[in-house]
Amino acid sequence: MVQSRTHTCNELRMEHVGQKVTITGWYDNMRKVSKNLGFLILRDFYGVTQVVVETEEMMARLSGINNESTLSVTGTVRERSSKNAQLATGEVEVVPEDITVLGKCIYNELPFEINRSKEADESVRLKYRYLDLRNPAVKEKIVLRSKIVAEIRKSMTEHDFLEITTPILTCSSPEGARDYLVPARNHPGKFYALPQAPQQFKQLLMTSGFDRYFQIAPCFRDEDARADRSPGEFYQLDMEMAFASQEDVFGVIEDVLPPIFAKYGKYRTASSAPFARISYRDAMEKYGSDKPDLRIDLIVQDATECMDGCGFSPFEGQTVKAIVVDGFGGTRKVIDKLCADVEVQSGQKAYWFRLDDKGGLVGGISKFLQERKQQVIDALGLKNGDFVGLTAGKKADAQKGAGVLRKFLGMACENHMKKECYEFCWIVDFPMYEIGEESGELEFCHNPFSMPQGGMEALESKDPLDIYAYQYDLVCNGVELSSGAVRNHDPEIMVKAFRIVGLEEKDVKAKFPAMYNAFCYGAPPHAGIAPGVDRMVMLIAGEESIREIIPFPMNKTAQDVMMGAPSEVDGKQLKEVHIKLDLPASSNGLD
Image 1 (cartoon, rainbow, N blue to C red):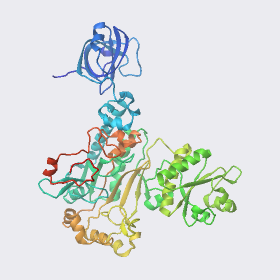
Image 2 (cartoon, helix red, strand yellow; image 1 turned 30 degrees about the horizontal axis):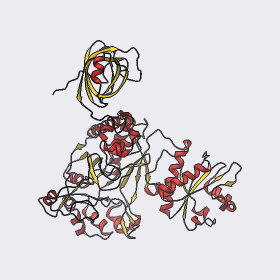
Image 3 (cartoon, one colour; image 1 turned 45 degrees about the vertical axis):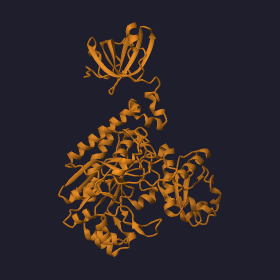
């Protein structure tokens, strides 16, 4: 059957009055007035149109047709006597002469009301995602995503980047998360891996003589879900530039992203170039986070010295961080809730006190500070009415707690947070090395293939913990959009960098043979970055959960409840790829 329509359900206007038209769509709802009068709303991808049924015969034809069946309606357009200014088609209606059922919905009851699907339980929404997507409020986020991706492609092409796709089946490579493995049928005992990122391939493109590469790259990582991270797979704006520096990368991103955020964003204001550059150590000291939300103007202060010996046991021998807030008049109930939220999110307790309108220290831990009142006031620059929030612990823990406390205080104080804008910043100068929390040994801090600042000389002459790398993160409104780096393209510097953490040249050659060998044939200096498309769209749409902007997302446990994935496979399929399952006796899997 060839289906045709003359207009969409968002197209008819007053100029179409008197015309015979055919519209198609879903049976959204029907308001029945009598046995020979009813108002049917037909909905398609584009919008809705009212169809007025005025005969008993036509009403009988619609009897027994369930909501969400698909219909073809042929009739005449006329002006509505009662217009609806809320609808684009609200001045007209269609009087049908023929209604045909194209696709029957056999169910009398739906899992949820289409236009209120966002109120349903998430597991039900994901199971019936094809119904959820019929909700215009859900669908519009996917349409927005499409427009943003198209705009990204257009802008990158205008900046002379060439879109090149890289392999999906590749080798396993340590990228910081677990690989998804694919058994190789013709190579028993061997596996492909789905790429965690096209990192090696894009660097190999630079060594191959390509100058500017990008793609909207699918990436696969076996990691747990978060509100801003989808498990399993995600997409990123992957880019790399040959003969490029850190500032070259910054220049492209600062030119490409702000116009897109300003054009499509919930907020119409976005940072203009140049974005703020904040060193990693400054970010941790001033904001308690390496992804600070610069819409909040509160700054973390060090209060270790002025709190030392105050008698409050959680502060003894610990680093203490403080955030001073003017104009925060939260009640004790509000403050207790805020402190509880900080502990849930950071794992660190939060404490507080105030300097009242008469200059007295009150509330919270104030009784421990009375004898050093002036010292505390001077150290923290307090004035009457100020609220002080505090965290304590090992330095990194105190900073982490202060960062979360700063966020919650900023959100609670309208005078300290510019909400309706996008504030970008670069976090730069990451340490090249750190002491691992679990191992207690020297490890790479961020990306082992980043160029150390100072090159070979720094590696040979500096304490490893004092070496910075040309690594950078792009942050927007407290969300990390991407990490990037100037790559270590020199085999000698690369081997030296790995030797510092106990790996030899043979280890580098064994783990990364293609890239190492390619660099030995004369590689250009190159740099790149890969902002997450899903996170960008989430921010632009103003959504709290990344699943709202993905057409068919997995749930929090990396399951596709609609398709039933992951699923069991039969023994024949396993035998073909030379796999036997070794599952606990209680498992329902195959053996």
